[in-house]
Image 1 (cartoon, rainbow, N blue to C red):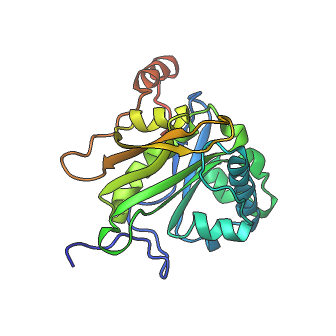
Image 2 (spheres, one colour; image 1 turned 90 degrees about the vertical axis):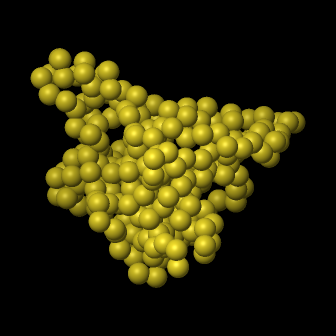
Length: 243
């Protein structure tokens, strides 16, 4: 075997070293959130799985970002989204989350988004990964997608992945394209007319294929697009925002 297989292994779920919950600060430079990694859906509260399932179903029914047309039950969603690895962004600090009662949590307010990481190909090419992202209704336009993208780039190589591919990003999904362009992804392909989207009846929409090195000399160093805002924050408050 030429290299170690990526993990977590669904048959033996465990988080690799360096993949642990950490705090981030949203675009307003005040609101603190925590990104929590999960090696298995069994570690996620059932009520949270149900809420995330509803959120994904809204995206599917919206018909503009995901290719699937059939919605999912909470059980099917759990196996789909957390089949290898998933992460959830929750409002509050690590300390806040540790103290909270998960079964009494109002996920509409507390859950900001989620993403998964999995191999894009089987077997000998399983070191190339893919990911899916979901920002919840009340968390839009707060920088959540960008922060989850940064976490993805931090964690994926620690799981053994060397390259990332996003197979299908509709070019009309401007917010998503903007994030991947800013995070150093390259547009490595185009699938012409592959999207029959609800908002564009009577025409087919092209999709972009994004790729990015995760390790090695060609892996670009991650730089926050908000670095100047962080300096402004420091000048105003005498400290840098948590992230």
